[in-house]
Length: 93
Image (tube, rainbow, N blue to C red):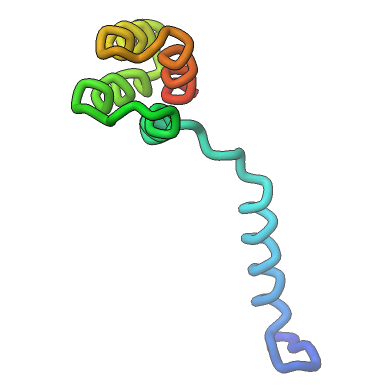
């Protein structure tokens, strides 16, 4: 027979809920994505052209080649070097 607490909720349900909540609290924070790269550019006044959106997507690939392509494509599209570096860093994390 399942043990119940005074409010009628089975103790096993509360234990399972606590376990799931604890696991979610310990999960690693989300990684930055191409969307973060795009948002960064947009927040700095750049229009999100297809070239820039694709550059951010490429930058999220995780390799140094992808990062380099992101950087070159953004700077070639008129993004300043420092903004391109920050945006590609966000895509790559």
